[in-house]
Amino acid sequence: MSESSDIIGWHDYSDSFGGKKIKTINPVIQSGSTVLFESYEDMLAAQNGEYSGVTYGTGGLTTQKTFEEALCRLENGHTTKAFPSGISAIINTLMAFTQSGDEILLCDNVYGPTARFCYTVLAKYGVKISSLASNVGGEIEAQITDKTKLIFLESPGSNTFEIQDIRAITKIANERNIITVIDNTWATPLHLKPLDLGVDVSIHSATKYICGHADLLMGVATVNKKYAAIFDAFYHSLENYTNPQDCYLALRGLRTLEVRLKAHEKSAYEIAQWLEEHPLVDKVIHPGLPSHPQHDLWKRDFTGAAGLFAFTFKRDYSVEQIGAFVNSLQMFGLGFSWGGFKSLITAGKFKRGGEWSHGGKHLIRLNIGLENANDLKADLVSAFQRL
Image (cartoon, rainbow, N blue to C red; front, side, top):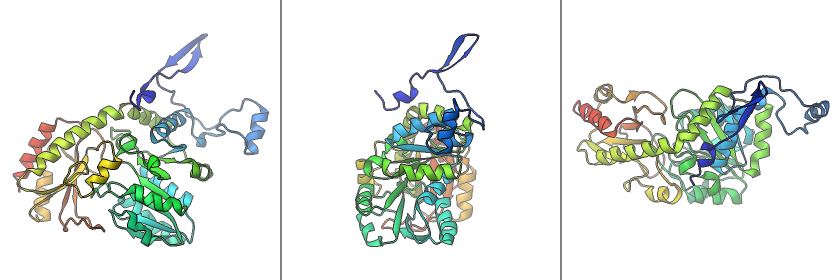
């Protein structure tokens, strides 16, 4: 049985009307502020911090709890919390586990807003941020100090696709009680289980593959048992919660994630392998291809690939030439984000630490959606003619 079968399967969310039960497959979209207690004794327990249930709408209602429990099972975690966006999940995680005087080791291929928050906000409050090479492994030990509180990874990075040696890093971190956090958005819980590899917190921008339709914003963080109580206390102190309609759509996305991800993966492989043979293309940067520098790590830790990858050209084209190439595409939308049904493209230059350099070239990043792969290749062929 597939691991997602339990999420797809039957659930009895029932109410009654006219003396008869109303049974639905999906949970109700429950919204509200006041939560009613069954008894005065329950209210007293809540006032004393001894009540196990939800006491107010900001604690997250039925729809949110159902989604969080489903994702927590997929992540093999202890607790999962939903947030209004991916960066919100990241910010709250970093704030929950750090304080003034601490040091964060931040992998330099992380999501841009993650780095921006660390260097412009956390640093302002006395948290030191130190950069890690994007392909870091066991050599991280040399950068750890007695102030190091947290290590933040993104493997692979969502623009340049370097992979870190997660097992080597978590082994060192766990021996020193350093918290490890990973942005696992690219792989989804189906292709990588970070907590099984020793990571303490796994974060997703559920906006992308989990929701899959580019119609909502959401982030999730799943924490292991060791740090769940700290994270839960911080979550409730800020009264974080997520829109119930969005939680409903995210749960719906989970139920089709496996099917969609297989389609994204298949088309992306087909297009990536085709690009490797194209005379204008220099390198295709896809962790699932043998040509990727950390392909062996990908084979060891991951069970599949996503539909997001990049490539570079052999020639160093001008900004105007890259613009002509990108603007001529008809099937690839020009926009940020990824993981949805619509194919997208971005282009940019990135500077990264580590052994693998892109030589200052433009990286053309493709989000391969659910369109026909041959149609996407034909669109690229037409755009290549502009060069």
